[in-house]
Amino acid sequence: MLADTIAAVATPPGEGGIGIVRMSGNRAIAVADKIFQPRRGLKLSDSPSHTLRLGYIIDPDTGETVDEVLASIMRAPHSYTAEDVVEINCHGGSLATARVLQLVLRHGARLAEPGEFTRRAFLNGRLDLAQAEAVLDVIRAKSSRGLAAAVLQLQGKLSHKIGKISEWINGALAAIEASLDFPEEVGEVGTEELKGLEEAREEIKGLLVTWEEGRLVNEGLKIAIVGRPNVGKSSLLNALLNQERAIVSHIPGTTRDTIEETLLLGGYTCRLIDTAGLRETADALESIGVARTRQAINEADLILMVVDLSTGILPEDRLIFEEIAGRDKNVIIVGNKIDMVKEKIKDRFSFFEGYPQVNVSAKEGIGLDELATKVREIVLGGRVGTQNDDVLIIRARHRDALEKCLEHLEAAITAWKGGVPTDLVAVDLWAARDYLGEITGTTAREDLIDRIFSDFCIGK
Ligand code: GDP
Ligand code: ZN
Image (cartoon, rainbow, N blue to C red; front, side, top):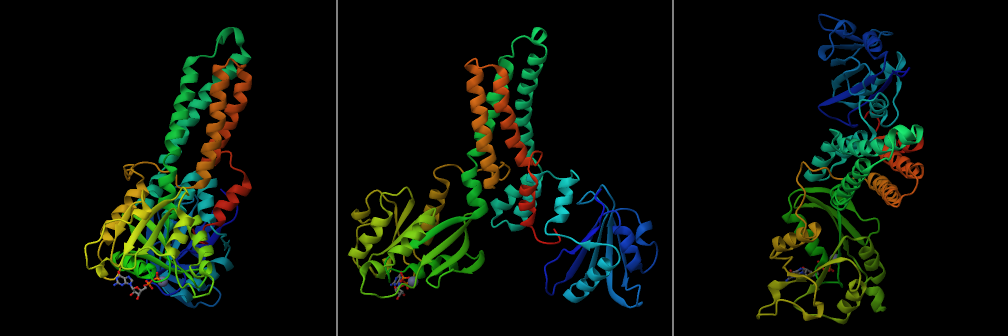
């Protein structure tokens, strides 16, 4: 157990139904005893673990009652941090919570750093690094699928797979080491171990293919809406937002001319970027905002190229399309203003041959479902979406470590099959094992761990 006792307000600032001051460490209960007076019955230090007591926070120096609270006690090792934990549930104002925090700091606790509670859970072996990261991913989940994936990771499903892969590698290493130490007794290191390594390799590959979806689930799908002025980009964005009730957030673009909105489309978070508000200038290229369009296209996972069915294709449309064509990007041509097209028109512009086209009316709300379906199809890329109980790789850090691990593992397998001395094979296997350890934290360096926990908020 770490020497000092940490404390922080664990609930967000501002007015709320409840505000929680959380303490962890070997003095947590003693500190609480000094300021918490139960309304009746046992003081906190005499209370059994995992109980809740109603009482008052009283400033021992002045005798003043600060708040009426519920105090909960969770003794080591059966707590979030595996240390003694006391949580004081105050009435929800930020003043009462702040004063209770002040009191515990004055009576022996110190202010926690961001993520320090979770970090202690990690250091005390309650969670491994991948699980600790999942805590943050649960908090920040932007879609139901993202939440499900993070919860699985928190439960240790990813760590379990990593453990299985490590075992195969360790098995091979143990055999190699034994054969080096006692060459006569062990004889050839054999096919059994090699088969284990090949299974490990397949398992890693299986995890890596989930990254594409995991990234989308975690970061959201970036969709750029491009097109010349007045084709209806902003109208389309608004129509999609109105249709989709579950708006997650509203992020004004960093430049005044770009607007980003987040919405859920078929369980996926989509960040729609409207390259709007382009100014009239004499320069044709500038007037259609080619530079901005280009940037949006570069960043996007999917491009909605909006054209106006009522005017047909104009030279500016062609200029914008030139920015898209020939790139390895997902594109949907959106023919807008279908409500204005009285006579029977051709379904598609032959100009965009080979690209999927959906015709809509942003104004009348026609064709939006079809557009959403098309987006979903393209997001999943023809794959069947994974089930909620499949492990997904949702962090780039894990993907990177797995890729490095795979490189070394493949080198080891090739070397082994090629008859390279096994002590050399072992070098690659050690490296592969270390990369796996970065995911769960057994071989993670201090600065990496610092970086991961500094992402957390104070009190978590
Ligand atoms: P942007 O410059 O591409 O963002 O285009 P806007 O969304 O600002 O729309 C330009 C004009 O087209 C506005 O007057 C809209 O009301 C109109 N408009 C947009 N979508 C439709 C549509 O589906 N049908 C009709 N009839 N008008 C539309
Ligand atoms: Zn606009």
